[in-house]
Amino acid sequence: MSIIVDRFNKIKSNINNLGKSKTINIIAISKTFSIDHIKPLLNIGHDHFGENKVQEATTKWNDLKRDNSKVKLHMVGKLQSNKAKKAVQLFDFIHSLDNKKLADTLSKAEAETKRKIKYFIQVNIGNEVQKSGILLNELSDFFSYCTEEKKLDVIGLMCIPPNDNNEEKYFGLINEKNKLLKLKNLSMGMSSDYLKALKYEANFLRIGSAIFGERNQ
Image 1 (tube, one colour):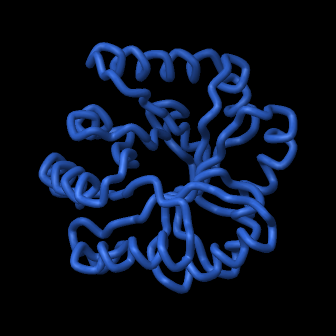
Image 2 (tube, rainbow, N blue to C red):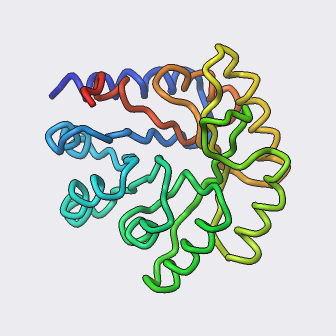
Image 3 (cartoon, one colour):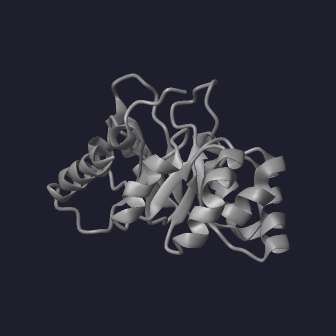
């Protein structure tokens, strides 16, 4: 599996060549990949990983997290309210906070588990009907609801731009909104566009296939 480490190091080199001053967190999106794919990165000390399904993550990561105490696990997929408590128990970051019902459930789950985690609000930056996320005109009110009423630790915004070869337009827009909310973190940029996202102050990159290869599922 040395090819996985080679790919990962290539991505790190690409990022370092940009000379960014703040820490860039590479989230290795390990969804659908086995523990055998994950261990080479654990063995070199990498600690940020992402999954998109609670059940799969529980199966893979319960033991891995116990044995690797520095691992930070990120929920990057759509989160259903009925899975919120399990998500709070396992994950350290959730990137898909996107509605009030979910905010309510997560707040309750934090109280029950006595565990605080970090959140990104997912923004539907292109108003796409097939995608989840808060619309821009609802973002300010939703942010206030999550942080003031529900006391959730929202650290930034997350977006997946439309597939129209105009990613930088959307990355720029979400960066502006992030600054207006005085947030310091941005979750954006994937295997195909992470270098573009870095131009607009992304510091949590969600990279899967460029590290692990193409998925079979």
